[in-house]
Length: 176
Image 1 (tube, rainbow, N blue to C red):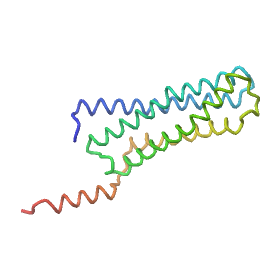
Image 2 (image 1 turned 90 degrees about the horizontal axis):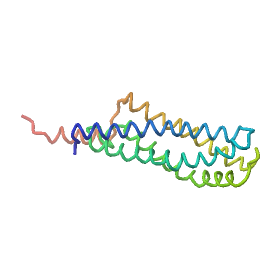
Image 3 (image 1 turned 30 degrees about the vertical axis):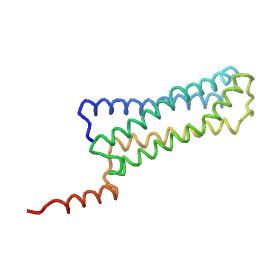
Image 4 (image 1 turned 45 degrees about the vertical axis):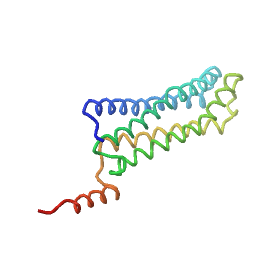
């Protein structure tokens, strides 16, 4: 089913806004992660991790889910399709990957935020977990840039599904 132009523009606007918003939110999250890991100021460290939890739970996660949902709606309601072009399929898979990794990281983020809120973290407390959070945020930011590039350049290349459907249509069409 192809969407009306007004609905298509609305869902595209929501999709682009949530996708770009995710990039900004993850960049802010990464800044807090670096500050929490590198700062010598105990108050800064103590404030950074609870702020990271709030950012991840109430900004990043909803934006990632909105981007995923609106991307699926966009692909199903436009001629691009969900399985017709590699760039669309790649965006979908990357968004699903980012969502899964974020959901898996939420427990660790919440744990560090809880510890930071109750005690003062030394530079070695929970160091592995704090580094993991920073590393995942960095990786997430880099991974989220790929769909932006794919959306702008829309590289050629149809999936086998698209080729097969196109071939079926051309052979099924009556020859004059």
